[in-house]
Length: 207
Image 1 (cartoon, rainbow, N blue to C red):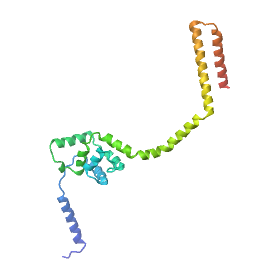
Image 2 (cartoon, one colour):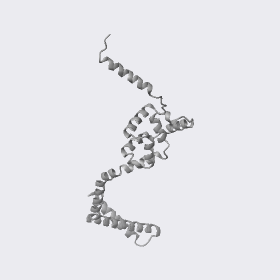
Image 3 (cartoon, rainbow, N blue to C red):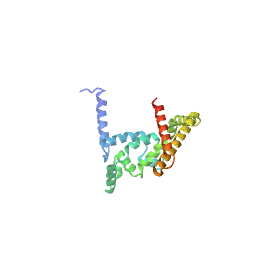
Image 4 (cartoon, helix red, strand yellow):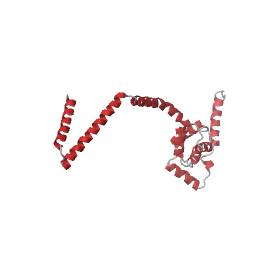
């Protein structure tokens, strides 16, 4: 029976794949399968050991861990249930080396104190320059508007009229209160003047 060249390598390729699978050690997986898969993709992008990543977070080292990777890792902040699972695994004194790379990373990740706050600060620092560039045009617009308002003569006149009206209302109301409480002389004249003012202002607004 003859064997072609195409058949030989195909069989060898299948055998080699089988050997690789058999050689791979059995690792303990604690995390959810989908979450572990997404984490593995992110860790491959970062390209650093779990210990190095966690040290960079503790030192707020954005040179070792760029802000883009910080934002990616923020999606994998350990949940309360995951922390319990990790602590239980340690309590049972099982070897960390037996865990998958993702679980081993989560083991170190979950031990960082105030992890969420530290990563939020790192993201803020990393995005600060970009945020300033985005806000600068808006700040300039606000400053220009405030300068324009401050130098506006029309606004000054409006404020002066408003202040005068406020003082007038206050004096007329005070006069009316004194008339009611103390029945001071000139009460009728004061009230009639106030009534005339309100009537004239109402007519001017309606016409």
